Length: 458
Image (tube, rainbow, N blue to C red; front, side, top):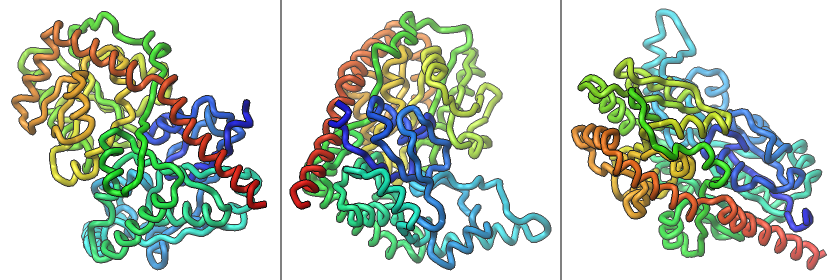
């Protein structure tokens, strides 16, 4: 039976983990795949897990790095802490250094900060990259003997590595898009026209040659089929509905102090502004006589980076990400409201329009009402509206947001109806048994075709 599973080579900015959206999605979609038939080439700053994949090659500067003189600048750290905000490239390349961090201290500190900001303002939101298949990487790939490449693409350098590996080892590609990062990448600074042209060229070449193209949501599937003029299939994170339902808050009871929870990444071009408004709303509710607290659990120090904007009151608690599955599901099942915020600005909508957050299947299964706060044209908000699994506020209106929270906390019939709809949707659209089998069959077919072609032309 194991022979039916091809050897899958991941080339990805995110490895298998329990923290990032990509890492969690990989882990769920590929669970049950023979470990010896998965290998991952990555540059993920997060620690990787071994429950699905045990073979990892961590990319170093010899394989993937900025070109000179940008590599020297980054290595020395003189401009490494410029970014005070996340950009889409941080979703691809890892988190930026905090705006509070500074490489140099002393009397010239402020001057250095200004110089850094001027430099980034001129150069843009990313540097040119080079990619190289070193002898050690080539040996590692040869020893694994892959049948197919699976990739979510990434920066220009990561995409060059994907193309070069496919060419060198004559491998088919399965590409999986998880955000519309192309719409937001390489748009700032003097180098952006060149880097953006390179990005679009590489994306189009890889999509054209890919054996299968996958999207993260039905909305992205539809849009990308028009954009790239070829078929796509939609696969997002999945959940073992029966197993994790044992943690669900079936009674949907509410404590004396309303427990409101947000779990997930925080990016300025995705959900930061909307989450700040949610913090303000919880503060207002709490001070109006309805005791409430908001807990924010976010990976990679995201929440701590924006703690001044988020912790507007003592009722806002920032904690580290939850890495244990049992603890995670117990925590979201205990919540009185689960938040799903999305920014309303044009840049955020462009980036996140077709995305489907990794946490959605878990939220739907947890047994607590979901408050969706974001523009209606974004896929996750549209999904909540059309299938009735969330209470939606689709206007950037603080008063309506506060009223929605109060309504959700006080109307038990509304809460029970939303929870019932959410669990029905989770079982219908996100159950592991259905989604994973269909997804894995796509990879198996790609690997089988690769093997047949190699045998045919030997």
